Image (cartoon, rainbow, N blue to C red; front, side):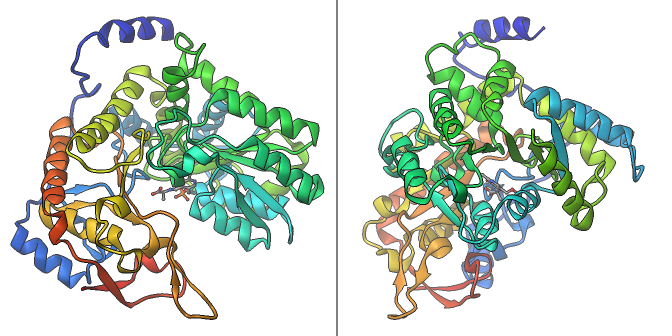
Length: 471
Ligand code: F0G
């Protein structure tokens, strides 16, 4: 069957138009707003789009997490959800699916990705340990650091250069990993993580060759390898597209090979689980699994639901199969690429090449007249909202700027990016065309854009609640 679909896809891609591989059964209205109205909304929200009500957003590209549209099969599954406290049938279906796709021995259900991270790191990490990762996502970093351990990013140099077209910019730098193991010793490295795809670095994939090489190196030192698997299917599809030897390999087999190199994974089902909530932790280690399940019961729930309703387990079990369908992945990556290429053609500097789940605009390059201390990313985010009711997110000095303890001056982030994340199966090509049109309008008016100052902020994670004033 999979082979048949694969052949079909090969034939269908000879058409120029890649259609959405679904039709719409249920719709959610978009509330239209005028520029005048948005001006007031933005002002009332103190120029922070996190403080804008979702109903006042026309195209919401804040995140691809938990925002997917579910299929009719998933909605049917929801009605079948077995809500038994212990031993629910929905859990059986969930566990069977995760085991079949990911291949790990133990599956521990959690309410979302960060809960899996917390359980994993509080089980394996101690003070002074070091956890390498291509790039830690912010909750992953926070959960490592919460244990008193160090979260060390060891991404290849190409991954730090927005303009580099390298096909696997999420790869781990093997030399940096080697040097790290040599410097701190294997006893202080409880595990190494690979984030697929690399969200913090532009949604860029990791190659099979890199995964294999990392595993080879870690095996010599008995260090386990874990995936942060949020966007595992998108990563697998990039391997199929870009890596030699995988052109004819079914996605499921690519996933199995990837996972086969690892000892476990954390997963947020809110991304490539096509669900609105949920996650899990996997491991092959019996001893660890026992300790993790004890913690699970303490804070998440019993081992056969772990923070989710039976209906969530059903939605994920079905979503994980749907995400592996090649017609879906062809459409998914084409949609992101279409947005990226059109913005690039219009002149906007984007992180190259377009990622899996999002397009990242290099705000530092786009608004060279606004210094990082005046938040060029924030200026762009505000401009997208004002021009077209589009909500994007700043990933720059607002999110990652740090105040120097001595000088009290702010140290800017290394990059000033704006992420336009695409929810799965939610927007059609005309929505994306509209985003492109708005981007062009913003680009045209870029010289008139002004920076911002922060007038109120929280001590941690300030981007969620900070209040701004235009300069
Ligand atoms: N790891 C990665 C790579 C992520 O992108 C996220 C979430 C998590 C872990 C945590 O998962 O939200 O289920 O607890 N990323 C979202 C985003 C929030 O917008 O990129 P979670």
